[in-house]
Image (tube, rainbow, N blue to C red; front, top):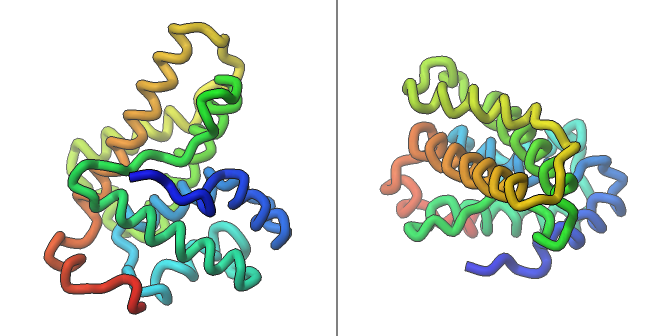
Length: 190
């Protein structure tokens, strides 16, 4: 499942800058994924306000950014619920320096954990696996940005990215809606 061009980091950055929101697109995506994986309701009124609290002090952004956030939400939800696991954390292109990609992963994970924590009151009562993943993700959020551009560092980054992906999917499996609840709703109607 290819990401629509409108949801590229550059497109999101341009809209965020135009709205004077000092968030990186990976932070917005991480927050959104955290909310979804924490079990936020799928109606627009249920997920948009918590996201805006995280990225814009609760203020409604311009309509063009609101539309883009809705598109990002729909795309992200489709990817997380995809049986082929089309979901991955938003990240800079592979051509970007490794240090920039590592920094973006750290920002994504920090935002994911924040989004997860604000909508999931039972986080501390999650399964042992989820608690362990959350602790490991907290460590990833603290990763050093000063990394070498070598094969070993690249392999470590890929491993951390895959861990973040699987961690998010595990949280969604534990805290997200039951599959039957998703099928009963048409998120585009909300």
